[in-house]
Amino acid sequence: MIEKLFRSFRSPFSATSREDFTLEEEIALYRHRAEVALEEERYNDSLVFLAKILRLNPYDLQARMTVAHTYHYALNEPTKALLTYEKVVAASGYDESNSYSVAAREGIRELEGTLDTTALPFHELVDDDESSEDTGGRAHNVAG
Image 1 (cartoon, rainbow, N blue to C red):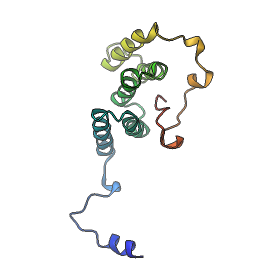
Image 2 (cartoon, one colour; image 1 turned 90 degrees about the vertical axis):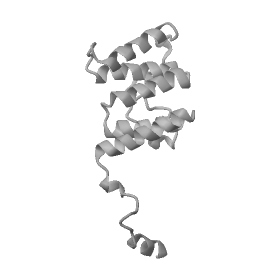
Image 3 (cartoon, rainbow, N blue to C red; image 1 turned 180 degrees about the vertical axis):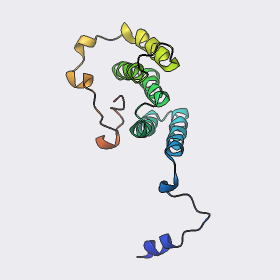
Image 4 (spheres, one colour; image 1 turned 120 degrees about the vertical axis):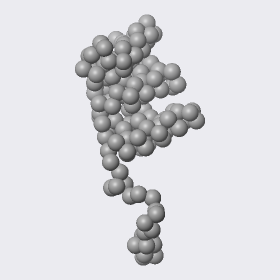
């Protein structure tokens, strides 16, 4: 009851409600939070924010590439990195002039010798749209 009363006294100077954000502003906010988490080496937190960006815009190549780099270099999860690099290439329309596609192909080449793709479990190869929120907060499947 008292909380409802406090909510009714919103100041015009209070923080903007979520409804007042444009899609671009919301993505920019999540991108900033992801960058801060990366700087603080909170990689899984960063993946959660990146997953939120990708839920809002599945073709955000910058966010997807950051996910791939996080798996590749920070978390040392080459399988997830490889799958995400492949999604970057696909999302770029296989455009060899796209800088994200070029960088993703370089990441794939770098990982090629380190993985035995025949040993990958089938469920890792399936394109899941499962987000980190759907997995109890674990950001283990953001490659999708």
